[in-house]
Length: 249
Image 1: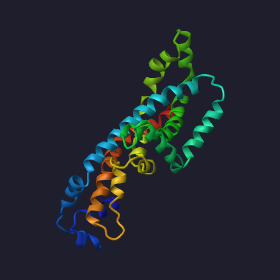
Image 2 (image 1 turned 60 degrees about the vertical axis):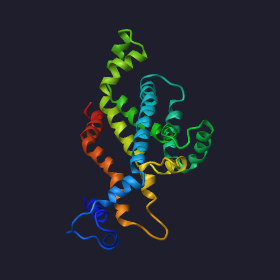
Image 3 (image 1 turned 45 degrees about the horizontal axis):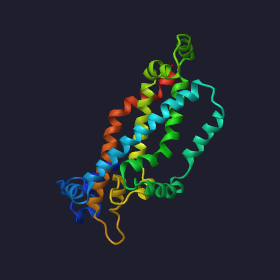
Image 4 (image 1 turned 90 degrees about the vertical axis):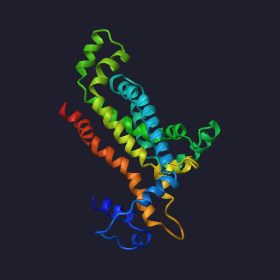
């Protein structure tokens, strides 16, 4: 908590005082927050980040949940090779895929848009979400699926009526982890946005070469991390519940 308080001290003092050592007893001045929000386009960046994360989550879960179920409960050829490729893809540096993604999004007209950035994020979110969901599906008792097969359920009905209700905590956990990671993502967003930056990109622009407004930099840092911190506090119990589901079973 101390780094947050230190940042708050920097953000709520006048530029002259905030350039030096922050004081612990002072009258806070919130004008830097107003400047950052109104003059620097933080509201627009907040909308961009929120839309990007929402679309990213929707695309990732639509792809990953059925795929993880099939890989777990069905005999799939080259499954080990596919899982190995997903592991390597997750470790692949973002900057190596940024230029190819830039060319593709420019060609299809999705450069500097939330949908285009969400599509690009799939290179990072799909491998991560896949490994998480595989663990949750593997924790389910196989007897449930054997009974569903005997009752005449196909793969889709088994997923919808048997597996999904049991892995909802896992889906929530996966969504939360993916959302936090993509909210803080910088490398791909820096390459694929210009006029519509996300919040981390906009906050990074306060670091100048010759001068720096420390109060505005502190305000930008708090506005950037604030939504994630609030989200993490309220989602903490869901994360713990989801990560311990497999152990409990």
